Amino acid sequence: MSLFPDKETDRKFGRMQWRMLFATMIGYTLFYFMRKNFSFAMPGLEQDCGISKAMLGNFLFCGGIVYGLSKFVNGIVGDRVNPRWMLCFGLLVCSIVNVLFGFAPAIASVLSGGGDPSVAALSWTLGILLVANQFFQGTGFPPCAKLIAFWVPPKELATKMSVWNTSHSIGGGLVAKICGVIMGLGAIGAANQGVGMWRWCFWAMAILGFLGLLLMLVWLPGTPRDEGLPDLPGTESVASANNVLNGDNGHKAPDGLKAPNGLNADGGSSVMRMVFANPVIWMLGFINFTINAVRALVADWGPTILQEAKGLTPSETGTVIMLFEFAGIAGMLFSGWATDRLFGGRAPRLCVFLMALTAGCLAAFWFLPSGGVGGIISSAALCMAGFCLYGPQALTGVTATNTSTKRFAGTSIGFISLFSYIGVSVAGKVCGNLAESSGGWHLPLMVMVATAGAGALLFFCLWRTRANSYDG
Image (cartoon, rainbow, N blue to C red; front, side, top):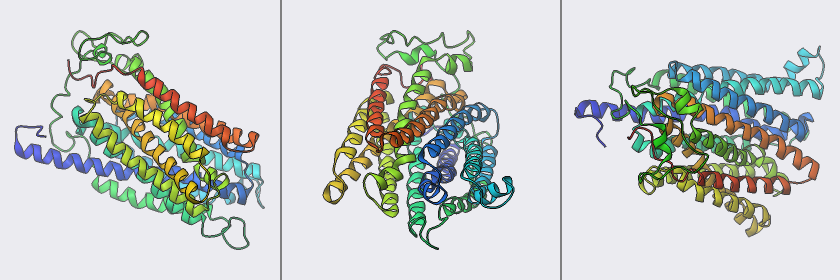
């Protein structure tokens, strides 16, 4: 699609748009490498270091809260600073912290006065490092969201942002396989074999982080104006926030979802009107809670569930989680295409069905038998859940960006991400505690099935929202 009448400008803009897209995908994948590796180190931390499931659940709870707050704060900051330097700085700090993760026992020993550190000392050290890592992880998404909003026109945003969102699953899938192989190199706790392999879950990802940082410094572009190009046409002004909630036929929004007055008299908008007082953004936040609570079950506890409840080896577990993430890639690509081509940019309508299917697939995964053909079908059901879940996960960001406009993209996504990682935190802690108190994973799985169903109902409340705020 041509954006500019001048062919040379249009050609250069298109080329830089795809460069931005792939560079930010690589950059965010590297952040994912250094965040999701912790889940694969957890069985080693439990068996090799004596850290309990309840304590690991506390780590996930605190880390998720900090990450959500960080994405919110850095979303606001990201709308005001150079996105290229923000991403590179965060990548540098996360790489350093992941190196320190591997040295956690030595750090704990020094802090406790020498000798072998106690479980409590090691837990505190790991917890502090996790909080630091999660805070600077929050510097990864906002600059990417800002660049995408500045480079991609609203009518293509669902498709191209879904392409970009595959970085979540590429990162999650690759880290699953790499860390699964690392943890499977020996039996955890066996004499001289496998002891401490969890350290390499962090060190290997840190090495990739440092290499990726060099690539970002050379290849990642700034905004169109930074690159000597004009702004996207058609995004200079926005419509009233009220219009976003109403259908093209002028139907009123459901009771309880009345939007604020929208624009100032001069056509300007404010962050309060477009984000913090916008009921669509709040609803997307609640929806993100449900999506990410369900995603956290697989991302954080999946390796443990598959090994303890389904009898898989660490390497087999890594393969299943990788396939779950790669199914998510297919789901995101399909969802972006379907939103733009079949649903006229109205993502919530598609997401109603996808979240309902997610609930069904999770239930099938749990109730199907382990081992043999049943085990294969069970794993396939989990992967199908990934296909259905990752579409809505990507499309909430698309809807928030189109609702708040490019001016407030970082702030709106940061705000709904705060809800996302409250969901991650609650799921991490609740699932760990329920599994330990009930002696199994049945109750946590059923809670997440109900949570996915609640997400479908919340999406239904946004059925009549408009595709974007740019059109009058």
